[in-house]
Image 1 (cartoon, helix red, strand yellow):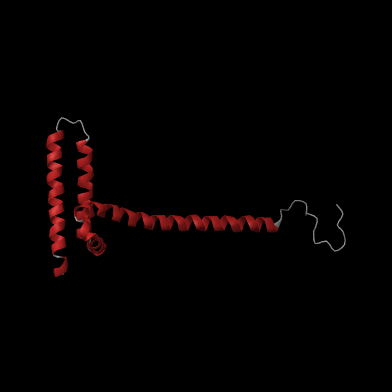
Image 2: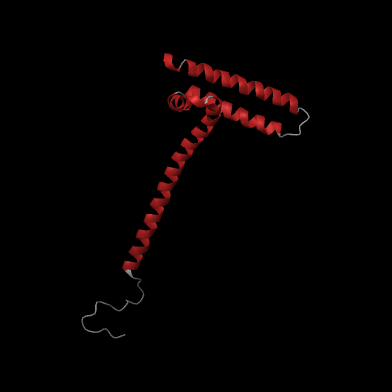
Length: 133
């Protein structure tokens, strides 16, 4: 291989890889790793936020005019948030049971409806006390 005068190209050293290429590969690996790690952290945080909000949707459906109050209360009150989660779970179970062909279909649906109504009343009581706290 001939190198012309003034050229910045250097002939490769036999038996050794290019340090620049190695550094380049390492840099992009590190960047990809960090981006993946950040993505996991962000998606985990958003997952938690989404999960909390999806559990509040049931309560907001029952009390649409108090949606903002429900969100604010759930953000600071773990007990209230738990009741909202229970309501969402009970509504989901009721929906599954309504689509079921179980021999105890009617009895179970009735029980879940009572549970849903009871939880909705509990949320209503908590919301009525919102201004008192």
